[in-house]
Length: 258
Figure 1: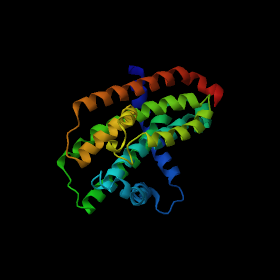
Figure 2: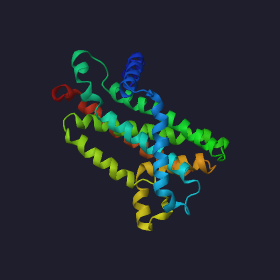
Figure 3: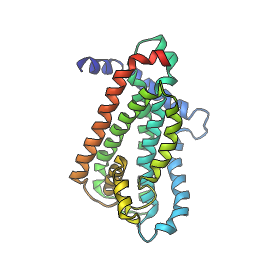
């Protein structure tokens, strides 16, 4: 374990360069550049609010904020895991030439998505101020659900990046999975709008717990529930543990398949 920690510290400058490169590539030749990290969630919030606000207006107070807070969590997970999935195969040329810890490519993708997450979080705060929503001091506890979603996404990203090296079909299947997962996550709708059995199904989704924890802190002035924190801790660490284990077992075979 100490060897991995020493390697991580040793290659920190490389990790920073990889994160910087990922962000630059994403917004290369874009007029607004990183500003799109603010505009994307705001534009989607406006569009979806116009479509769904009439459906849920009696069940959700301040639906645009409810929607935007859900988008922030789910969009990060989707972006982080989708980009991390191709991190190894997209850097095949570099991996073949020089030695470096291969997990750095996955971490860099998740970190670059986290920077976008912080920009989206800023957009949420701006909207809350603009709409004169009550901004409580407890928003500082948003770091708890945000930390959980980062760890959970990193674990899933490590798992996917290791598997997709050999099984490329996963990349196509995952896009379908993410679309289905969106509808199994209470991003657009409130849990109360679902029948009881469906609430149980959606509740099994690990992102649901983290998302609801984030909304409790940001919108409802509630401290994170201890049981929710315990569940999120178990789910996040389990995902990370599985991801690290599979990545470690498969990394020596990467060179044969990339």
